[in-house]
Length: 206
Image (cartoon, rainbow, N blue to C red; front, side, top):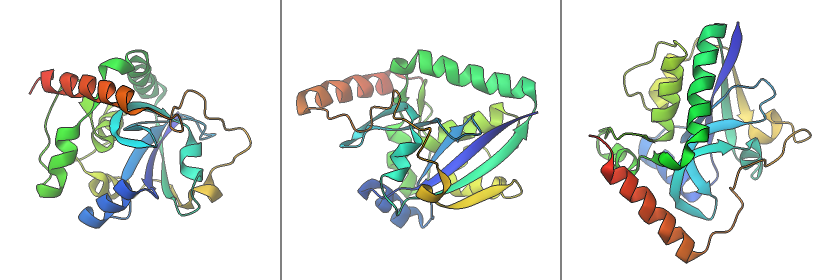
């Protein structure tokens, strides 16, 4: 047996605070982790801290969550078979290799406060859509197109740790790795990246 983790976070950023205000849920973001040392997370989120509009598949350093002492995490441990773990790992490795082909699903994110309609686009996910897809690949019974709160409820019987990120994540062995979160991106480069991502999203299959 192997273990994967679903990680729900309450981030200390303006967008996160706005999402929590609209959804009235304690957590505004979710990720998955395949390592028991919590050294690397996977999600669909902003790539750069300074620009919330440029998003896609991200290999997140947990250090993102220790920048503020107010960030809170809920970490859910899920035991799965070796075969299902291999499927999840293969799925994530494929996304990592082809990350430029994946884009954040801005359409679903924009529609969520107005009833939660999901827009299916090829290679486009929100953090919730991605996490839900990973959990289903792992064989976990999940509601169709679950939002963050619905995923929390579906996973309520699994072992859970909840508390401040700075208390639950050890700083010692961690590094930023390939995470570009703190990298500064200029306006021109940001516009080019945003145009590319919108083009990919528009060309996705309905």
